[in-house]
Length: 348
Image (cartoon, rainbow, N blue to C red; front, side, top):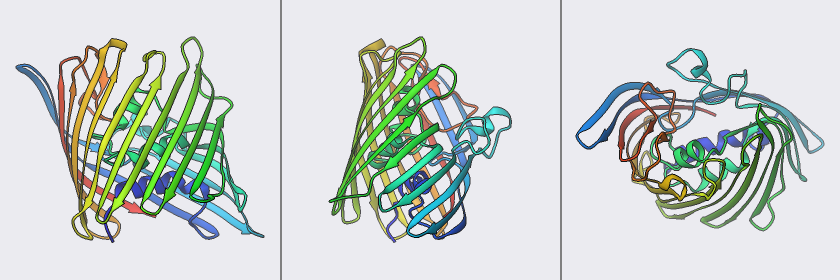
């Protein structure tokens, strides 16, 4: 089996609510990522650094359960999923979701030949398009996530939302999501996604809007795609986002891909640029990772990322891994680098 486990595991987790892959009855699953990270932030002759244990260097950590039953071709069920960390107490315990129980998924779903309907806490369907085209599969160190999600504000989970995914026809799949209410200060939200698959190629586009009280709405459009050439998978992503912070748009682009050296060993690399006319925001990221399958369910990884703040904006998030004791944000003119190694245990 050629290794493409990062993207496959994350996308599988985001798709569990659709109940497409499992037979009737209870189904338990988990994805756990833990390791060590050595990070450094430098500016000119000054620098600070730290080596620490981190949860989720590559993928989020969570456990979940799905209960479903199929009658006369219609599948109905419940999905429950809890995000957590391996290292810190308090509010940070819920880093891979909010502070509620079952903070990543808490929904009911209905699936039939007419499509899939999901109601409740579930994944933001626009975020799935980020994972599809991100050159490094959405790694929490050195990918598009720090800019598109961390600085751009795209959420990964929607509370009290309703989504519908239509059946795939001629390679085309359409999905829509509506959030009638959300947390304090956030009003209605909507997402639209379209994907097209043909042979070894997959393309996607998604749009989203989040309404806010007392400030500008957040809006974004994401284009992504990947193309498989034997052992090589080329990937690309482009996102344009507007918000109260980025009135004139934050544009993030990334290109690269992954290569399977053997059935157990692969590596990936990505090159990213994010810029905006607001505060002359400009951040460049270069990162690469190596992955080895110890067993079917256990993977070892190591990755290295360099992020440079070439603009004038301060407090810029440069990674999406957390919680971390070392600052996840840096200022104008600074450079952040991280070497991270760990293990990923998947149980699906």
